[in-house]
Length: 284
Image (cartoon, rainbow, N blue to C red; front, side, top):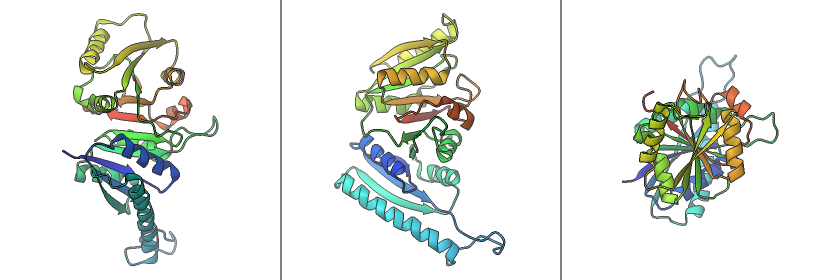
């Protein structure tokens, strides 16, 4: 059965880097890739009562630029793929807000993974993720999102960090994509517990055992850090081990709170140079 992957592009180097990463990650999988670019019409808010429509300059010019950009991307992909028989591509240009376009395509095409790039950081004042990445990671609740920082190397993951508090239980289906990526790449999963107490309570022990069952037959190990914030713990652990990916479930009102909200992302400041796999709480 073919996988259906949505690749987002704004024609930047960052988004191209993310596309190439996805093609490498799924190089031996049968996939239908949908390459999406959204464009905005241009019009004068004072002179124009309504936004321009097809056939009008304010619509046709940005539409043409979008189509030309997708044509350039298609040529780059064709060169990179070298006639990979497992991959098919469909190029989509839409005049819609990015989140709305993503939600509609995820539903219409039964997309199972969204892949997008994001800018890196050049100094401590810069945000880790761009606003588009934040919105998709936070609000797209129907399928996983894989975010590739601009600095990410085209290296398949061999070590994936999975932070947890053990305070909430996970459904096996929530972890399917993490397990699949780890299995296909022979990657180890490092389960990182940021401790608030010296010992786990009975509920936490049960949740830890649940992860043992889910990760059975995979290379996994348990680790813990204490007396630090979640962001600092992840930063230190990833950097010290030179890990290749971070994966977690975006559970609101729990351990991470809403970890992907803009203020917290700015606060993290650990300049991740590795992909982040955002899974979703299926109960939300």
